[in-house]
Image (cartoon, rainbow, N blue to C red; front, side, top):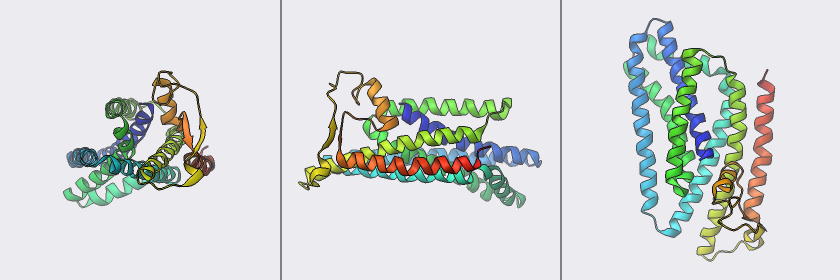
Amino acid sequence: MLGQYVIVFREALEAFLIVVIILSYLSRTNRAMLSRYVWIGVYSAIVTSILIGILIFSSYGMLDKDSQLLFEAIAAFTAVVVLSYVVRWMALKGIYIREEVERKTEEVSSSRSIIGLISFSYIIVFREGLETVLFLTPFVLIDISTTLVGAILALASSLLFSYIIFIIGIKINLRAFFYYTSMLLILIAGGLAGYGVHEVIEYLEVKSISLGWLTEPAYTLDIPKENLLHHKNIIGSILAVMFGYTVEAEWLRLIIHILYLSTMLPIIFLTYRRKLP
């Protein structure tokens, strides 16, 4: 649940942040009457994102068992790619997000373009919603109930967090916040990369395709399923989501996991280090 919570909390906060910037700018420039069009775009984007999530999950249910393995692998790799891009983009461009959003809001609102304002708010929120759907898909396929609980708690928390920052006015270093959550998301993405590799290996085994020693266990921990530290039990599952922990990992899975982390963690660290005060 922790991994799902972090992902949804981060994405929802970004969406709330951008929407608040748009609404604040309209209010500050005496165009608050246009806010209702922003909300139309926001609500439409949320509904669309939910429908896409339902469509993806329904499509998975119609596949045979072999195809489901491949689907899970593709979902995991897609989440890794998109998650990596989003974290990198936020590290580079996040500091200018207010200026960019306000500039675009001025463009679409100065002409009193209702369609333009609805479309802008829709695209902003839909992008975050689609990213969230892609990130959560691998987790939904593994455990839908836990994922939904984590997502709901994260949405409520991000809404409360946004209220505290923008309505009550408590000062929080958002740049530092996004830095630490970015590092956490990279750890989660590393685990997803390893999980995707594991599903590919299982799919190839079903198709009687061998990759030799790469599919052999790199290590095996003598931890039974009833043990709390097993990756399918309470403590172990948290470690599995956050760090890709498993009681048994193939060589290929371990190699890809280490390569991903050793590449992305330094990139994000150095990017934020240049920009953090």
